Image (cartoon, rainbow, N blue to C red):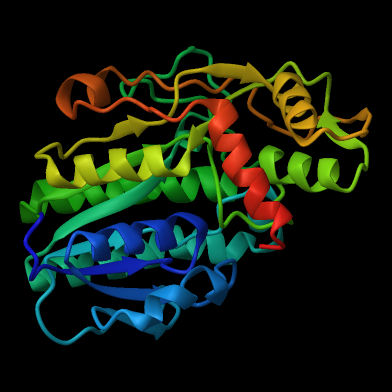
Length: 314
């Protein structure tokens, strides 16, 4: 959807990913309406967008009601707490935005005849018994564990999105987002990269949970947004993994950040949280073959840009 007169609504627009997505749609010549209630989003992420006459912002909770006059060509539902520390703090809002928020966003897209995109997650795979994880894998999720509020909210959101696609014949896109990092992450996000960078820059101990053998696959935010836009422009209605297939242990990530910051920090180990995934690596064959997408930004470059952002005071 590259029409310069296209009108796009993004929920969670003041968040880490939502703000980058809004920025890119504006660069493509679209009009963008952003919605956020600032539970985890930050106005600092979108301050620069207010200067653009094609950007409009609405402060609202999308679990209640979404009303936007005029046409819409796309509705992208990116609102949700997205880190373990966030959904531990906001378990019920996490469930509500995945269920009620998705329902409201789908209803709006249906009413406007707009394409709908759901920001889903690799957490749909839970603590996977298959590695790497293809889109055909159904997952290994504890529905009543501490992470269940996020995992099951996203799994329900996918089911609801596919129901609207099948029943109402809506054009839908579902992106399963794997570990992503980059500028506009919060210092107290709770995820590995911002934790390690914040600790390293202050020469404080780097906190590794368990033995640090659990793996993650880090994708720089600009690569992720490229993949999301390619998926949005495609005709794929079923879930697609977008992430970097380069798999690293948490301990390797900690050491890489320590080296790149020149930190004097030591690495300390703490107990592993409940249901923490042991492996995380996307199978991106669909993204590669159907979208022509692969991540481009090397880890060292992405970390350097992220570290610079954190050094600047973010």
